Image (cartoon, rainbow, N blue to C red; front, side, top):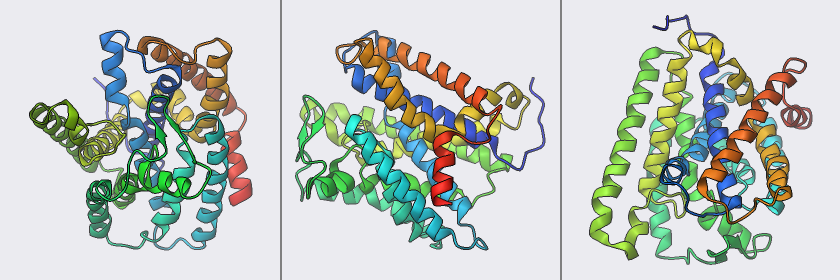
Length: 347
């Protein structure tokens, strides 16, 4: 049985959560580019569970990070955050030229919007997080969600033009501000809790479990009543991001964050250090999984037409190389190369 260790100043459980979120995003993104072909039942089910949850957890962790960086008493953080947002926006658009489902340019906008709320009450943050999914539903009745999309090829026309870019960014892109900003607001609210407390960690784990059960129960019970044509209304998939998906994504984030923080109160933390180090380089590794990982897939002729299990296998191979790289890199350097570049340019 694991022994309980005193909590450390750095919450390494958050680094481990970042690693898990990164691994989940590799699985989903490799599946997108390798082809949405049905494979073994276990592989299809596994990817269905991961889809949308990893990215949601990533956004919540970003909200926690911003909350830590802007705690009362900290000064001159606004210029730094804005410069970092500009950096993420620029490299995100470069990524989008290769991989249209890039999340970094959305991140940049989340950070800028969140700066307006860093001194808002926790009630305001939670209220905004709850309201945004329903604002999105209202927008579905006003705007055409299919505008710009070719769903057969998952391509979006007019992405680098007006009004396509704005529409994609705020309404019908892969991670639109409305309602994805909900995850960021939840993370910002979490940053105000004592995340080093076992009691808080247990509550996060419990709340995440309850939210996931509620979301899946709602979808499973109501879906059959609506029929196949109305299935999007109860879908737990991230496209379109309906309220029950936001609930499931929030639940997954709370579950992963609470669980990872609890795990790192035990002696297991010593065995998971390589994964912690990997979780500290998620920006670098996110870019590498597009330029290197997907480049390798293309070189081996694995883009398109691949069953789910092939995507899972390729993902785990890349994740394994990422762990080895991150461990070796941080034997010499303190931060990843892209993280270092961002700090040099943005402070």
